Image 1 (cartoon, rainbow, N blue to C red):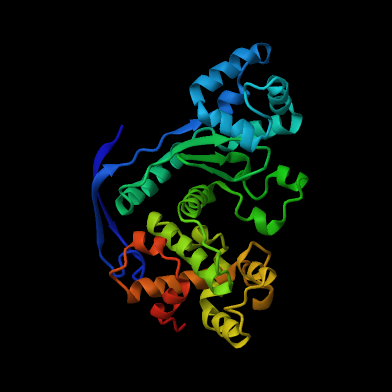
Image 2 (cartoon, helix red, strand yellow):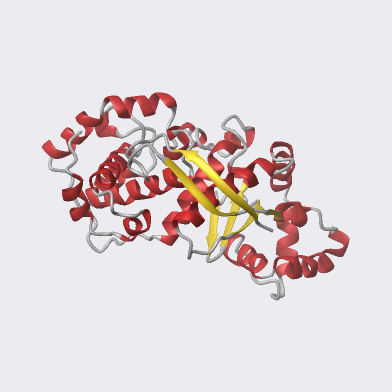
Length: 333
């Protein structure tokens, strides 16, 4: 059920979605997100009556149950001969069940998540009124994925957000730089990022560093618009110190890329070095964050939207002529 809401929000980032400080008036329905706790239903079925339990899950969750078992767990269709045995092995696995117990401890309920996602998708509905609103589920995947996206589905793998000090991450030898973002506060930001990436896929027909930077910059700009009150550290997945480093070194980073003729470099390893997760961006010194070039891409997008105030967020997300964006941004850090 949806409630009528008039939401008055003061946008605090001057060059962002509305390009100047003003009130965004959303006179529309509040999008109320309900998260279905699939992992609870899965792990609480009676093993002595697992066949009946599977039938019940299949009826309750329909196509999502099949997506989960076939594409996430990869144990086959519920109709396959070995399905019951494969599913039983998964839910009775010692480490998986211990994970489920920790998930119950960290996430006894998801009311705050529902509230934050409702706010985010109210903004989404405002900017993209013709787009569908996905259905939400929580799951356990065996540490395979963080967020699973389907055509009308977002599933959150809760075991990937148990907190950086979770002992399971020690056992799995998860790198410290990855663990920094494996906490509940990152869930909504990750959901909006994953949804944007699947709604607006990267056109890599002409792939180079600047194109990749600007694509990631668009995704981060989208996140900002959906989560206007969320700290930058949660949008970019950086620590506070890393955010400060980026702000202090914006001009130096851009100068380095220009002077070393890197922005049009199309080598896969070079692009990956600057835009993919890492302990730090090697060329930008050890106290820089990994993916620092994506933050630069965001700053260029931010400047582009400021200089081209008639471009809507919808139009921005559809643009894939990154050379034109760069030229019209007139970016000068």
